[in-house]
Amino acid sequence: MTHPFLDLPPMSAAHFASIEDRVAKLLATGQDVVIMQGEALLPLEGAIRGTAGPGTTALNVVTGPYGQTFGNWLRDCGATVIDLAVPFHTAVSADRIREACAEHPGIDFVSLVHAEAATGNTNPVAEIGEAVREQGALFYLDAVASIGAEPVLPDEWGVDLCVIGAQKAMGGPAGVSAVSVSERAWARMAANPGAPRRSYLSLLDWKERWIDGGRKALLHAPAQLEMLALQACVERIEAAGIETVMARHASAAAAARAGALALGGGLEPYVHQDREAAPVATTLRAPAGVAASELVARALESDPALPLAAGGGALAAEMIRVNHYGPDATVGAVQASLAALGAALAEKGLPVDLEKARRAVENSWRQP
Image 1 (cartoon, rainbow, N blue to C red):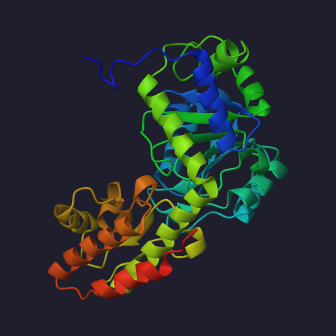
Image 2 (cartoon, helix red, strand yellow):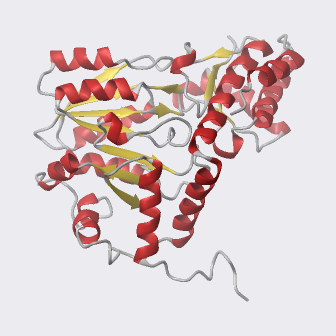
């Protein structure tokens, strides 16, 4: 008896390359695209270790926990790291990038997270890209959460290393990711004696053995399930139209913020400005005296499938996340999440208005 998940034929190099081509089209890029058969931390770390070393002076923008991780990797590579940290309830500006570069003229690498699903903010990459180009630095971007939820345009923005993953707005599995690599980034890797080689972290291996060889022979056996899932994600986005998919995420974010404010109970958006709020997830600040993790746990008792989570680490005490991405970027998911949070708040004696929240979500939802 055959099984659709188990008895898969081997994936050919041509099929693998065709999926890379579709990802490149999604990114509107003419750069090389390398699919990495692992969660997005694989290319995120590989790209840093490939391009950074003892001679690197890196400006590492920290708008959430992933920025902190990148700084740790950069230091581990021997780079000199200047952390530019901003409060997690806001975004970084291009002017802040320019100020940091003026203060540290040796900066030749800038690392940034586009949208931080963990904190609910998003950064203006187009404007920041201009500032990075003025500096002449290599631009590294984590677009794992933003791809599919808002524009991601590495060529237009001057991004040299743009990492995406399938598990957020693309609506796919966590086990596959990709990175677009500019010619400048390849040159930096080739000149870096510390760049991983003959390693699963190595992007150079893919460049030398896959891309330079005309994409005829794969480095190892493809992970068929993940590759087919990535293909299906891209096909679904292509069928709907990327603008429609992004509009759905923007509507979910606007509706979640409006609904939370209408709900009451002391909930308020964690990210202060609408324009700095990520379309992939809405973060909320729990009312004073109420632990966010306890509130989320109680809300999930009504429906464990709701896209709700408490903040990570120290943020678990105050932050609630409504993860309205991928299949959960719907009016129903937003309404159900807020209704469950409202019920949990009401149990604590806090005044909520479930009907007002429901109407606010409906009225704020913008149909594409």
